[in-house]
Image (cartoon, rainbow, N blue to C red):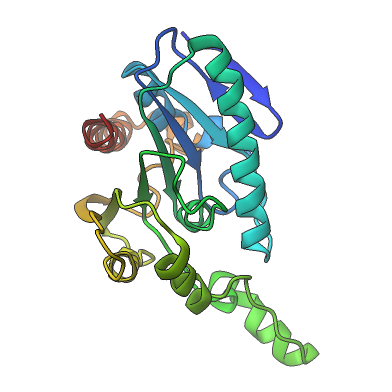
Length: 241
């Protein structure tokens, strides 16, 4: 069993001889403690001898600022790991939901990794992501939007994101997913190798089984959920190596 090390806001778990590194940014408000909410996903990667770094954050409106901070903290955590293992064969960035956008906005343009896995990417406007925001902004006569905005994000991806190897994972029952739009932007660049994969599941499939399910001990639900997460891990691990 690997122990959890906390380096700044990054939860780090390392096998003795990692075959690669997975850097995870999860979705809004479920990534305050990613080592808990994504426990099954992380465990799957550890069983396949990947080191895992998962960033803890509370989302705000300045997504570029948060993307920069995540990138800096991942870089520092990686340097600590490299002192222990010298060489990391493969380094993969993995985002879920908003986490995809934050990885795509990394200041290095994706150059310092071997690929990105974007699970259930979404890039909605603030008033759609936060239902009450539109009504409040009208009443109080102010306008609030994420920075960069959805349209600005796609422009930045086309013009500044340089990583060619991207695996987009879209669940069949996910009405929040915008990976089709992301794929269009990625393929608008030269020499792009991005591909999309459609698998069973929904927007919350990567997230571990909830407390309510555990208390009810619903073995059938748990088994089905675990199987989907394990299949997801297999697809990513096979692509990454």
